[in-house]
Length: 431
Image (cartoon, rainbow, N blue to C red; front, side, top):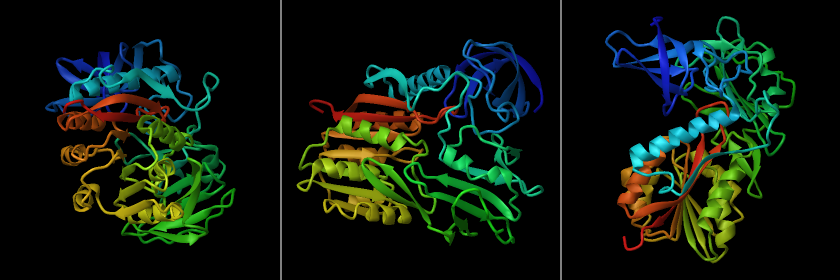
């Protein structure tokens, strides 16, 4: 650690926002760099016997044309780990994501972009901003609290250390307006802020420091307060324990800090992509797997109508309760609580018309994919937040006789290496 090497930066790598470089035959994963640059890389992790090293580009000798000065004063080597690519133009960020997805499809699925039905772009989402302005898209932020000062900050990359901040540039206006960064938080370990995009609901979820009592919370806007106990359970302190979101023509209850896409335009963007790809017909049957609070199940139910049926499966008990509440008026929807891989074989379902799956970052896996392939759906929509998991599962679907006919990628996490994909699969003729 601490050694500095002059290196030529190679291609972007999957995960972590780093690029690949080599020094004397050993791989360095370098953050704050861009492909083609020559930089001074300072080692942040690794020893003389490590197979690879992690490093930060602390000096840029030959910059890439996509490099810009980071708009955020807390972005850069040794600082906040939240944003990976503040030093890259918006178009340059999307190019890097294109390169990552292209590589993962080739390496893990054996597919070219054309074979995956992908036009080779990562689509921007939201209005175009003036040069130098950062999109304020993040409607949920978890701040860490410095135990010494009581001030909030964000974690440094791969570290428990805290970078104090007075503002996060990618935070949505609903987060910023609460003034969390301006006050002290004695006795608190973390502060999660949730600003619903579909309503004026604001929620703060506090994790107390061990043995401490929660302080009296006074913020700049009306807000609900919840706390997390030592077992990880959430309890209402003041106001509601949920926020109301708006998407796909409905209002959605999301309780206890449960999962909801954090870009304001993500839910409608993904629903539109899924429905365009599946083209649900009246009277069809559908599965919504890993269904969360029921977003895709509700959209499908509207399209298949009273003669069709939708079964949603979700393992989170509170999410299931929310889904049942959100879709209570739809008699053609049923929501079950269990892990997909455990419940699906017990349902007795041997065939269905349509499937949507939005698995966690690790993907669905070979066994679940094989089961889904045996159901003979005419189309499957796979929503993915990790390109490697998507590519692996596309390979498993190919073993089951399915191929992607469409793939779209969306830049729903600007300034970071993350992005979202929607793949549409169909059975291979004669398979």
